[in-house]
Structure formats: C-alpha cells, structure tokens
Image (cartoon, rainbow, N blue to C red; front, side, top):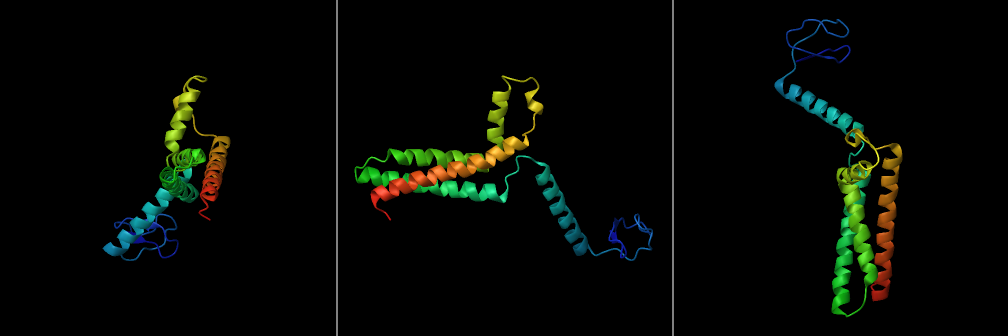
Length: 165
C-alpha cells in the first residue's frame, strides 16, 4: 500500500501516481504501518455502521443499563434484609421491576424493538421492514431515564424505611 504525501489517499502498491490527485507516489508503507492504517479504517467503518444503526447501544445506554443492574441488585439485597428483619418492603419489588425493565430497554434495544414490531404486526402489513422513528428513539431514551428515576425513588423510600441513611 502506498500513501500519497500530497492528499493522503491510499493507493495500491502497483500504482506510480495517486488515484486522487495524480501526484507521483513514493515507496510503499511498511507492513506495520499498513496494519495500523487498516485498523484505523476498521474503526472508522465500525463507527459509521453504528451511527446508521438506530438501535445502537450508546455510551448513555450502557451507563444507564449498568446503573440499573446495580440498582436491581441493591434492591434485591434490601429485600433479603427486609425478609431477615421481618419487614414488608413491597416498594422494593417496584424498584426491582423498574430497574430490570430499564436495564433491558437500555442494554438490549433490539429485543424491545422486536416486541414493538409484534405490536405493529396487528396494525400494518409488511411490519418487518419498519424502522424505529425519531419519536420511538426519543421515547426510548425518556423511558430509560424515567424508569431509572422510579427505581431510585422506590429504593430510597425502602432504604429510608430501613433507616440505612
């Protein structure tokens, strides 16, 4: 592989002039440099693919999903503490439910979209070709925030009842 010094275009080894700017090409890059270039191109292509995927799990989704899983585990721990101390913590079941639902929505959006497509199958034909709308994607983010908020509120109510804080 040869890299044009003028425009930076990538050219094959058998070319003498740049395919983009027609500048005379120098020597081919080393195997290591070629590997670095190809790895960089793979990263760029992966990012382009992810930006086009409407159900790509973003960093926001990953953070909210992991925090929701931590909240679900904390709620389950408090449920066990409630069972040991013989207290009624039905509000913790609400926290576990909302944290689990938020984690699934955030970390596995394609599963939730398949459920939405199942709902759409009763209303429209050719539902397999549907793509999530901007409204769906925005609503999904709002639901993640609200679900995590309800889970945190329920967890705080239970923790205050236990006098953990």
